[in-house]
Image (cartoon, rainbow, N blue to C red; front, side, top):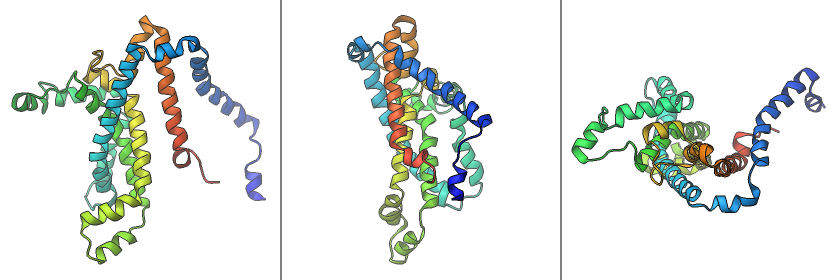
Length: 266
């Protein structure tokens, strides 16, 4: 009975700003759908420019997610399970890209991985590898801004996992690597999947770091967000179509993860 009363009607002083805030968030998205060129949507969606940007975005976001999984899962384990001193500071540094302006991230990548950067100059001189203004540069920029989403998700899953199963595996003689592969990783797989999906969605929508570090070259570095920005000046209908695609992907990701990230206790 007490629980039912706690979920009664909101007071007007809270309900009014709540609905205004909801309108503030939803009306622009509704405007995007209202202004969409539905009559020519299929033609715009399958045009060469849109298709090229969509294909490049999907490939780069997927490669960036693979890169984040490769480095992010061990990093999450380090933050959650190791006895490394200063983990709090390390955790804060890992999550910096979440709040850092993406353009600043792109500048930082240029200073480190550019042809004259701290590491980039050696990559260029020793191996002939140049990342800026290439498709590989897009992948690196997207991975830089998206990896924290994966690390936070996997670290949370590792902290919530029951360590007794790992202790039992160790008692039976399993090595740490075998325990991680056969016990730890399967137990946190939902967190890995959730983090991977969020990571992929964030990489798909990345703009600032990409245009700063990888530039804007059609067919090579022009991803969907960059194509939206360019199309606003020359072909607004194409910009709307690309925006709708990104909107649908974002809504689909959040809807698929609603039980983990949105829904509260019932």
